[in-house]
Amino acid sequence: MPPLSDLSQDALEGLRARLREDYAALKGRGLKLDMTRGKPSPEQLDLAEAMLALPGNRDTTAEDGTDARNYGNLQGLPETRALFAPVLGAPADQVVIANNSSLALMHDVLVYALLKGVPGGKGPWSKEEPIAFLCPVPGYDRHFTLCEGFGIRMIPVEMMGEGPDMDAVEAAVADPAVKGIWCVPQYSNPSGETYSAETVRRLAAMKTAAPDFRLLWDNAYVVHHLTDTRPALPNILDACTDAGNPDRAIVFASTSKVTIAGAGLAMLASSPGNVRWYLAQAGRRSIGPDKLNQLRHVRFLRDAAGIAAHMERHRALIGPKFEAVEAAFSARLDGHGVARWSRPLGGYFVTLDVAEGTAGQVVALAKEAGIALTPAGATHPYGRDPHDRTLRIAPTFPTLDDVRAAAEGVALCTLLAACEARLAG
Ligand SMILES: Cc1ncc(COP(=O)(O)O)c(C=O)c1O
Picture (cartoon, rainbow, N blue to C red):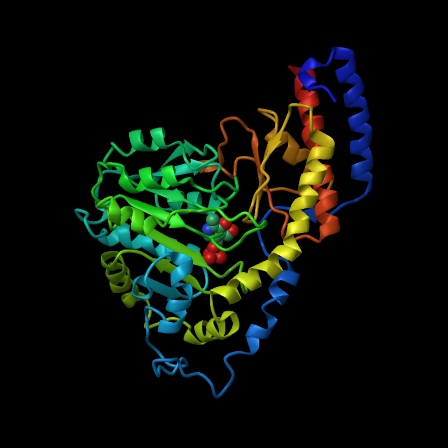
């Protein structure tokens, strides 16, 4: 198929007529499909079923003698911190294991920074001139919602295939109001890209006007591989220390998409100073986390090899869904020059860039055909995609047949919207 831009008016009108017939047939199928959120499927959650029986009634003593049923141990059990230390890239004594939801940890870190300030700063961020965060786009909508909720101005920075546009980042951090940047460094949500060694080095070493600038390093997809190709993401904590900025990065991760999304473990790792700071704040909020769940995770996953083996089982379930999206998109869209999409090596999303100015229309067409997509704009701060172009496809939750049907439908809507836009314009 030649690119739409090469088609005559007649050929475009002919194509539109055929696409409209296909679209009418799609609507006639009465689909009811949801591709909106990156949730694990029930089959993925079943993989951790055996964990729910742990640690067992009489076996609640941790390695250091702690009775996991009782209060205390704010930083987390030593064996749980040791299990996840390599995942986070920090020594176990610089790891904090908390309850479910790393997003909650990010929220708390922001709140503590706003109310109390962070090590190396001049006081609470909320008492300074209005502050700003750099937001790589496309990005994770909930990061943006956090900033918006706290009145933190968001500055979009383009993702370039190896992480954010570092020239733009380095220019922006010359403003002392810029206090941080959101980073999903591996299999980014939603672009799927992994930061290059050079990006990591520049983020760690760049000169920031704010002395208390923070990299919020949300490594949500650190063990979530979809292929045998494993990215070599450098250790951000080491890079920051080597560059003389040991307190710059705070690393987050969780087992939400490893074990159980609503009942996993969230974790944080950083410099000794940041960990002391975090625990001082968190110690007012809680007497200690759910350590039974920590024991449960240690006894179920056991070690790094156990985590890797478990993630292979996830891959076996979701890999075919990503392949189905790829097959459907290339079957309908290849050669037309109207869309680009990611072929992620890991993580939970495919990014689909449709013809400029048509993302909202694609979502509307899909909705009318019974396919729910994340709203256009959700990948950008304030829900505003200046090009109205980027869509996030989340293929993990629906069944394989539903993913296939939804992806075929989305591809059809993408081409139809592009064709109509071209005829209108
Ligand atoms: C980049 C990123 N960070 C954090 C989360 C949420 O993590 P948690 O379940 O640990 O709160 C998600 C979930 O989609 C995500 O994509």
